[in-house]
Length: 433
Figure (cartoon, rainbow, N blue to C red):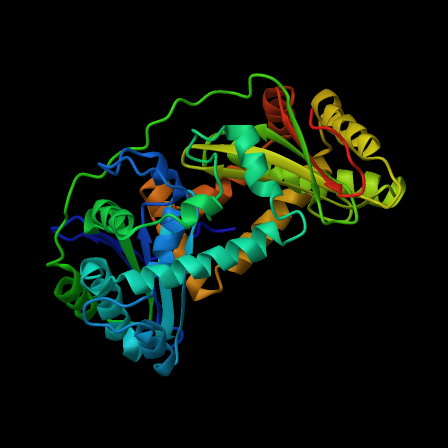
């Protein structure tokens, strides 16, 4: 396969805003994608003079960015884009918060104006009423997705076990309920002034547009937005899991589930792609080693999945499995470790590896057919690698993985201490330990 090369232009405005342009004339659409290099990990930094280190503030702020700005009344950001025939949304994770629109190319200026108005002029429109409203929205979101969702608390408990709460990834992005309910106007104002600055953001425009005209529009709307302060770093002491960590809790579920997690390395580290392939080999298809063994051969689990999470400040390899009614979670755990030890002891077959690499390659190429995905990927590479056109580099990471690399990475991480979390149906009471 030929290298994936995109005709990208990258430059910076005088205020530090990074701009990435990708003209593509195959359809009359344009995608605008803004990344702020701020996520829930930044809640651990020394950003607030009042030392308000509250979890969930980055996610709450994503909501606040849709509540209107100096020249855009509340709810009108959505209305303007949708009336122009477009779609929009935002998302927050540990490392970043992003906002994006896809709309007919003749409405590009509208999207640029909307994004610039909230980047530069959000605070004049901030009110206690808007904040209280969005605190309520986030509260309900947490109740729906965490407290009242089967197995919904498992993710944040696992994060705490693997990373510890002082690590940038030690808490869930949505935040703790007590923190959500305590947010103040000062919290939001300080967070905005610290992190929502041009020099802490990157803007991608991808699709059907004229470069020179778009550059002038970007300068017009973003060029005069001023930076407010230095961007604080994220300070923390990283450490390995010092001993195996075990935790269980009762939930309104009918089947017991086990999560096993190992602390790994950062995004785009040498082991990152290797561990992606290991996860795929274990549970990527019905023929994956763990699915085949647990679900089809032994028939003791209703599901099993594995994935590797990696970010700017670390990563973890996770395997989870839900026990079939009446089956032993201890047996499931034993089978998982048996299969992992086989990888470490015996390695993997060449055919397994080639099939997995091909599957990842096809999925990767297919995803690039979506303009929104493509625009976001430019920002993703720019954030982690400093080069928005890193598609070939990314794919080559997987092409270079050999069977020996799988064995070595499994040995490097899986033989270390791990965290184990069990979710127990409420009628089966056991002690934590």
